[in-house]
Image 1 (cartoon, helix red, strand yellow):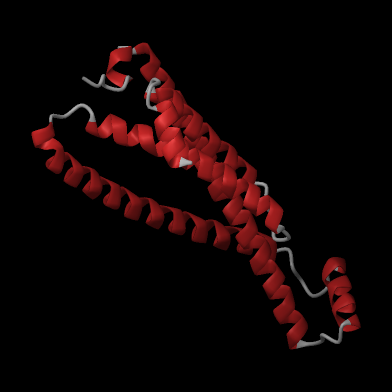
Image 2 (cartoon, helix red, strand yellow; image 1 turned 60 degrees about the vertical axis):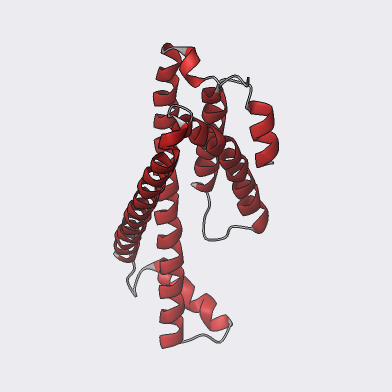
Length: 192
């Protein structure tokens, strides 16, 4: 698909493909932000397929914008600089995402866990239901902790994907501002 997207969209203004790719990534992020701890394979697959098409439309214009403005003698330096910036940005983004996810998970675990007491009606009902499955005592408390961890993880991931969706919307707006600039800077070069 990446080959077809590059071949077909190579004759167009690369900002259009970039906007479509980022819009698909935003849709995938917003769709993923509504997942919960009882998610099924179909919803995950749909979200990942949409994100895959978004990346396929996103990557060719990025490469074209990075490399077409420099002469051939500067290409090795440009490629090296591009790879360094890409690697540093990926590492920084992954660490920020992981930190944000873990902190949101602790936040939700604390908020949801603060409402749990042995004497609340919901917890008493949980222990009664757990006893029907021969889960009593410490095992029931462990199961309750497991459910609390799953719920807090799901809510934290929802927040992270919601943030990523809005970041993509911001990128769409920023890319939209480039439509005010000279169109020739973003068209593919003519073959001689």
